[in-house]
Each structure stands twice: as structure tokens, then as C-alpha cells.
Length: 563
Ligand code: TEU
Picture 1 (cartoon, rainbow, N blue to C red):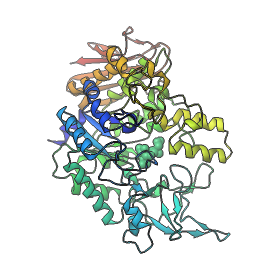
Picture 2 (tube, rainbow, N blue to C red; picture 1 turned 90 degrees about the vertical axis):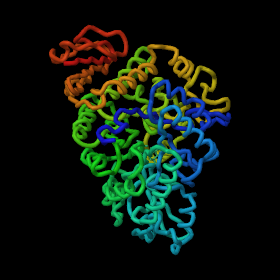
Picture 3 (cartoon, rainbow, N blue to C red; picture 1 turned 90 degrees about the horizontal axis):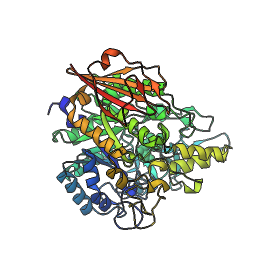
Picture 4 (cartoon, rainbow, N blue to C red; picture 1 turned 30 degrees about the vertical axis):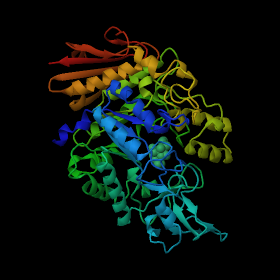
């Protein structure tokens, strides 16, 4: 199929975070059997692809993003037989299944690392980044460089056996693989082929733009007033990243039916980088997850929360639309398992405007050019959760940040407020299926408490209510499947300087779609070029249409005009 008709350009992907989706055995943790039992919820929504967050064997230090066996299923979630049953059921329903591929690092309990840490003469010593420490002015051993970890603290851990340090950009239980070593790359490719041969339809590649590091591992510039340096210039989109991804494509994907979808999660990636990564002629990845728009409300750290300006959001998303208009492809997302719930973040999760603002955010995102991703519960307008204290917080990133920030003298209440607003646990509270005590997620004690608002915000209520967020997502997904202008149309931002209204057009072969969205709780007049409205019909809204030229609070409206 010619790449410009690639199936994933008109597809919508739904992310399942297995441990919080549906629990079929009552242990309080979601599992593969639970997903199987709930597949028809996804069929009803109309999604095309399921992205499964990791279900591999793992100590669960980072909720499965620390893998100790790449070719099995953790008993917490089920078995390979359960996985095969799920893949078959997904395919029977005309959907595809994409696995999360976490190969920048393995768990420190992976057999590769266990062998590597046996000593400097281990056959797998150079599968990871081992370096001798440096000696500071007091003669003490210190890490090989000053890099900080994404999860606070140093990015190096001292191994007492050899007295050397190993690199971990994330937790000390997530040891970075050394991709300079061709044996590492070939082992990863063989594992990927094994999953494709098992029927998997592609991969979401976790922090894949970090796998190439500057082998000199130089110190980074100090940042945030802390003791660590910013190593990102030496590992973000490193010197061999394009070589590696092109090699992966040749070794794993080339010659496979076009069914395969590859999406690279790339913190810090720029538009210019993404043009290279997603140019079909370069055969690297199909699309990337970029992080610009989900950093607009963050200051010195992600937990230093600032108000997001609509003009900044429009400038950022507009830049990505323009930058990938002629080559490459965008992914489109607000939510995932690492981001707070968008209706609480960029919308209004109060009782008056939650539904309307959730629908508005969905409309704006899904009418952009690219492949939309729906994160579990987003289609219900699920909100952030009311974490009362740091004891309620599970996530390693948030807990480590709290410990380091408070130790550095920050006000615990202020640090907690940042966790409440931006913490990843907001995305990880159990899926709200119904109003029962366990929200229909489990008959046991959930690993993370269910959001108390599940009594009103749940799938059962949403499916029964034609005006729900769920049915609005269903209509948006149907529109993508039936409106070529939505898939192939160009993108023009309107009113770039307006702090209240997000407006843009999509145009393709005589059809123009006009999107208007009021990001405030007050009615607003919209000054849209008259010719755009002449002959245009409203085709989708998030409530009763206001009069032309005026939008109600949190009103979104889509017009279509056919020349
Ligand atoms: O996330 C990488 C990443 O950049 C995020 O962790 C980011 O640092 C923050 O959490 C969001 O602002 C990927 C996975 O999605 C995440 O769950 C893992 O913790 C991480 O990699 C390590 O595998």
C-alpha cells in the first residue's frame, strides 16, 4: 500500500494500562483476562489499534517499564496463552494490537544484567554502560559524570562487586543498555521479530531516542540549582540514533506486511528531528510522541506547575502541524499513563463544565492532522484523583521527587500540590466501569484507590447517555473513518493571538472543515472570516449550537463546507 495511504493515517489508537484497566481474578491488579472481557467497549468506541503498556515479567519498580524477561508475560497479568487469546480476539474484532517496547534499559533483575554485573570480565559487561568512578577533592569515589536521573538523584549507581558504576537514566533498577554493542541490538531485534511472528502488529517504543549516547559521556551543564548536570545533549537523539532506527527497520520490519505500526516515544524531540524520524523515505518510524505541548504548564521541573496559555498551545501544536505537513506524520495525544488527566489540566473538571470541556478537548485534538491516541478513561472524561497525602502516591517518579525536593528544603505542602496536579498516578487510578464500590474494575482491593467520583463518571453511565463524552469520542472516531479531509486535509491555524478561542481549518479536495473552540467558562464572540462560514454546515458540536459568531462556555463546533 503506498505510504501516503498508510492505514494508520486514518486509525485511532487506544492505550490500555493493563494494571489499571480490568481485573479478572480479583487480586486488585488489572490483567489480560480483564482486557479480553472488556474488548467490546473498545469496539463500541470504534478504535482501530490497542497499545498495550508492558505486561512482561518485571519487579514492577516502574510499573513494568523495568523488564526482566522480554519474551514472556508476568504472572501478575496472565500467561503467554492468555496473551495469544487476546491477540486472536483483537484480530477477530478487526483491531490490531501494538506492544510497548522498552529497550533503552532492562530491569537490574534481567539475566543480561545479572550476568553483566558478575564482574568486569563478564561476557555481557559491555551490554551496559559500566564506568569507573572519579575521585573528588576529598579522595572519595564519585560517579563517572554529573548526569541526573529522570527520577531524581544521580543517573549512576555504584556496584560494590566491581567498584564500578552503571548508568540508569531512570531508576537504579532500570540499567541502560549499551546500544553501541551490536550484540545488544541484534538481541533486541530478534526479540521484536519473535513478537511480530506471534501476531503483534507493531510497537510503541519507550524513550527510543535515548538509546544512542555520546560514548565519551561528558558532564552536562548544571540545572535547576541542584547538584546534577543536564546530560540530555549527550543522550537525546544521540549521534547514532538514525543509524540504529534504520537498522532496526531493516532487521525487523522490512518485508513485513504494511500492517506494522511503529511509534517512537521521544522526550525532547524537535520538529526538525521528527521530520527525519518519520520521513517514510528514511524507513525509521511511522510517527513519534513529542512532549512540547505537555511541557507548556511546567517550570523548573515538571512538578513546578504554571498556567498554560492557549496561545502557547496553539503555537506549539501549530508548529508541529506545519513542520510535518509535507513529510512525516504526527501522533496526537493529551493523555497517557505518564500525564495527568487533560480535563483537569487543560479543561474544567468541575460539575458544570467537565463533560463539555472534555468533549471540546477531544474535538480540538481529533480534528488535527495526525493519528489520535485515546488513553483509557479519557473517553469517559475521567479526572485527576484527590490524593490526600504523599502516602497515597505510588509512582516512583513522584515519590523520588517529593523526597529530594523536601530534603532540599522545599515546602512539603507545595511539593505535594505539584504531585497532585502533575503526578502520573492521576492517570493510573483504576478504569471506572460502573458505580459499584470497585468501579467494576475489581472485586478485590485495588492496587491504587478508585477515584471516588466513579459513582457518576463511569462507562456504564456514559454508554447509556447519548450526550456523554464517550459518544462524542465515538462520533469523532467515526468522522475520522469517513471524512477524507480529516485524514488528508492541510491545516491552517486561525486567530493565533486569541487567548480564548482555538480555531483552525482543514482543507482537502474542495472540502473545508472549520473548527472553533472556546477554552473559557464565559461566552465569547468569534471573529472568523465570513467566507469560511458561507455555505458551511455545522456537523459536530459538544452541545446545542450557539448562534454563528458566538461560542458558549467551553463550546466546540465543527463546520463542513463543500465547494
Ligand atoms: O517515559 C519517559 C518519560 O520521558 C517520562 O517518564 C517523563 O519523564 C515523565 O514521566 C512524563 O513527564 C517512558 C514511560 O512512558 C514511563 O512510564 C517510564 O517511566 C519511562 O519511560 C522509563 O521507562
